[in-house]
Image (cartoon, rainbow, N blue to C red; front, side, top):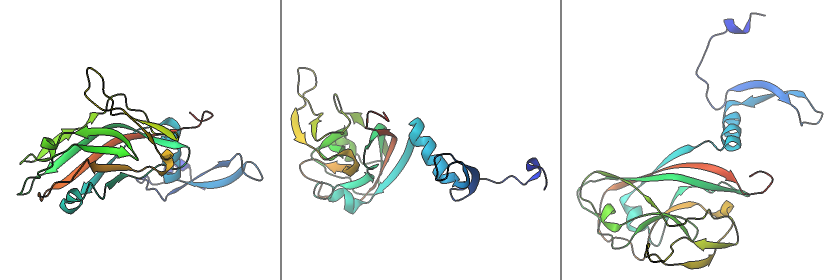
Length: 204
């Protein structure tokens, strides 16, 4: 058998396999295959590495975003939540500007994490916006969750207590408050930088 360093080098893909030891298997310490994809997922979640995802939202979806919020990032599952590090919106202006009247938000269930004013969506040119974090935003992780829209002397936001479902059932959604615009024909791209966090004390 030739030496390992004599084999051809290739760029790995998710389905490629590497050999390792299954320490906790039954029986223990068996030699097994691990896929590159599974190792990447394990490493990312264990070390809380950041990931990024870009979602295209069509004009039809934007116009319906009040009644039908658009899924931007699928929920991570039981005992986990998403920590959205930053979020951006790119308006790929076509020919007709939107006429939104209320804020555009990214939310998990009833928890609003990021928001931009309607004028940002209504701009009549290609533009990238960095979304603002809502004041005192908590990560949605319990049955009694606090809506971070909070009013005090400096923030002019409204405090609300809501019952929110567990984060494993909450997708991150593109949502327009109150009413969606009635006109506009531009694609909108939402980019989020995020981490997956465990919400159990043992794994936090």
